[in-house]
Amino acid sequence: MFKEFKTFIMRGNVLDLAVGIVIGAAFGLIVTSFVNDILMPPIGLLLGRVDFANLFVNLTPDKYKGPSLADAKTAGAAVIAYGKFINNVINFLIVAFVIFVVVKQANRFKKPAPVAEVTTKECPFCLKEIPLKAKKCAYCTSAV
Image 1 (tube, one colour):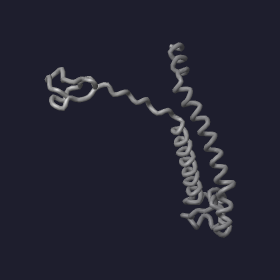
Image 2 (spheres, one colour; image 1 turned 90 degrees about the horizontal axis):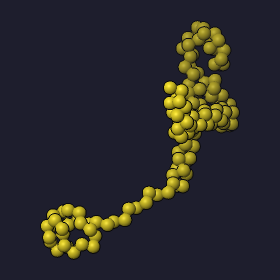
Image 3 (tube, helix red, strand yellow; image 1 turned 180 degrees about the vertical axis):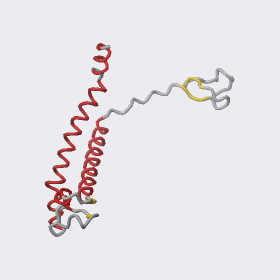
Image 4 (cartoon, one colour; image 1 turned 30 degrees about the horizontal axis):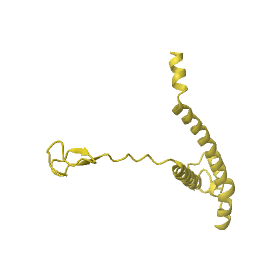
């Protein structure tokens, strides 16, 4: 059983998948940091000093009335944190765009499948496959 497991793990596809998942997780952290720490602060500044991470709707104003999402959650207020949702949507769009670009570039380097040389043609009378250089069809004996 251990030998079968070792064979399974050592397959190329399983190792490629594991490497892809690890790199993808690391890339996700980089994109999250890029969005939260580099992209969103200037956008928030352009929109009037808005901190997207703190945008929320307080569903229980009797429990909390302040401007901070963290304080609202600490106070036990029910909130809809739509600012974090906006950040996550932007994260997703960036990751999807980068994956699109990577796949598009990888496809450029793939060799096209070799085109098989045509060696047969179809008889116009009986529609059977015959050699390309044939003068008569072997099936219906018609001149082609």
